[in-house]
Image (cartoon, rainbow, N blue to C red; front, top):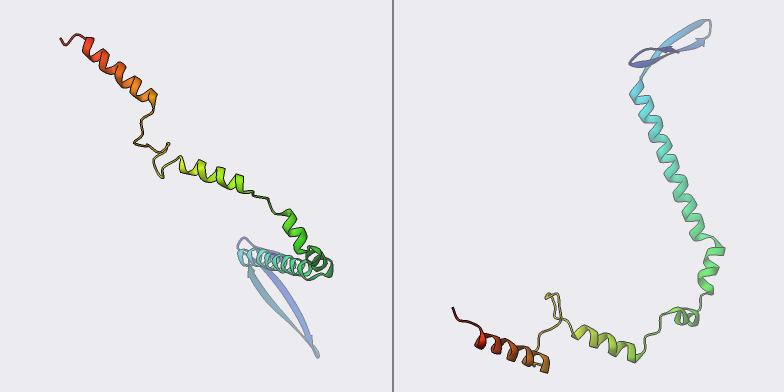
Length: 129
């Protein structure tokens, strides 16, 4: 094998009856390097796929799936009582969609009317100039 800058050169010999034939084969470096990387990638992905398929089809894996009874699945599910559902609905109704805060109602509570009265008193006593 002779190493060149752009390609690898191999000399292959073959003897046929009484004659010897020598053939020169040149392979590009980039073709050889990328080809070997591609072959290893395909081989690795194939081994990974076969391994995952073996795990899924194995009897031990199938038995663990079959052992989980509907009762066990039901007991593992989170419990939601009526009280929790009512509280969640009440909390959701306090906020208006896309407003970023509590829903505004037309009902004024006592504090709002007190504040309005104080503001009106200040406006009356304030100097108009």
